[in-house]
Amino acid sequence: MTKTATSPYDVAEHLRTREDMAAYLEASIEEARGDAAFVAKALGDIARARGMAQVASDAGLSRESLYKALSGERVPTFDTVLRVVGALGLKLRAEADTL
Image 1: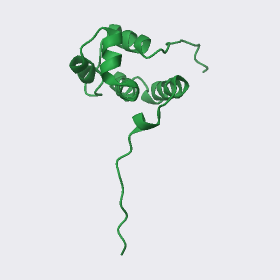
Image 2 (image 1 turned 60 degrees about the vertical axis):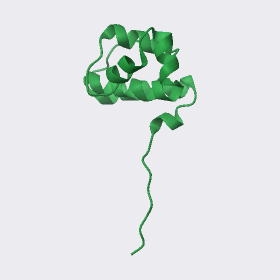
Image 3 (image 1 turned 45 degrees about the vertical axis):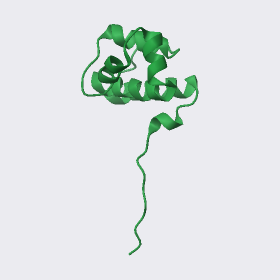
Image 4 (image 1 turned 90 degrees about the horizontal axis):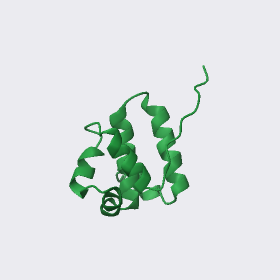
């Protein structure tokens, strides 16, 4: 039997444009079904794609605290989410839910 070599998939390697990042975040919010840690992890993926140190600086946070907040193991404050989204050059929007 032949063994197949695999490597871990890292979505951050594929998020090159703000449009890609916005689409990924939007899909993650829809998929999360209220799981804030899931959305935080998606924001972490996007921040890694942009450069965690730069995003932390632009958001006015330390790199270490940003890694922790966006690890997916905890729920960041809404203030942190807004700072990160702004630092990434993205916007959060609301729309009416279709029932």
